[in-house]
Length: 285
Ligand code: AMP
Image 1 (cartoon, rainbow, N blue to C red):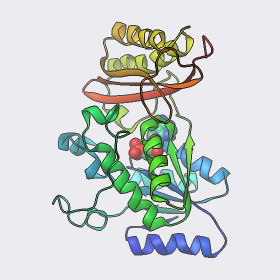
Image 2 (tube, helix red, strand yellow):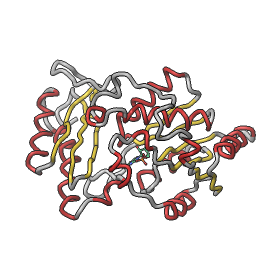
Image 3 (tube, rainbow, N blue to C red):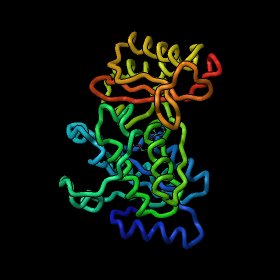
């Protein structure tokens, strides 16, 4: 496995893969790797891609600088996990390369209209502009590729797909299912900050999604089922919604077909998110 840090080496590596007839599989991460990240690598390898995994904690997507400071970092164990998983190039670019002017406000931003203002965007203004901007830069450097994202961050997948369509990146976005632990808790780098009791309480997020799937009736009944589980567990809820999978707008009760149950809450001061597909034709769907 190559370890790269400069944009020039990274660009050249990706170009060489294509020149040799290979396909690049890009796996963008913020490091602190866990099985969820590695499942994206596995999927890329199963598709026959040569995997470039990027590890960059992007300050422009943190509206809360304290949250940025607390973000877990484990570069050495990341390198070992990436190597064992079959990553071909681990790219850890320096902040000075990615955002040479940071923290100055003089920079070019991808602005995400509407999709970036709802759900996660409500409490985190500018978050999705920061995400879209850094992902655009990763795509611009890497060039034509498949890019793997986790459905765990469902809104991120929707935002990136829209950006690829709007800005015509030569990138195929592949969304991969959420990896969970044995209690149903979605794996997240932030979980290391949960106490034992917090971990237990955090399972209410995935349990609320199951309740939404199992409830019969329209979107409002599914929402109520989620709210009940979260209230009982004492989770500080940011939102628990049933939304359209492409517009992220709340679904009306007349709506049938597929929707997405999405939930966010704070446990032990850690903000957690989760989501699941639901079928509004079917009770228990
Ligand atoms: P992050 O390092 O948290 O920015 O995540 C990097 C990528 O890994 C994103 O595409 C995430 O959606 C994905 N990811 C994070 N956690 C999981 C998980 N539990 N299952 C699947 N993918 C995940």
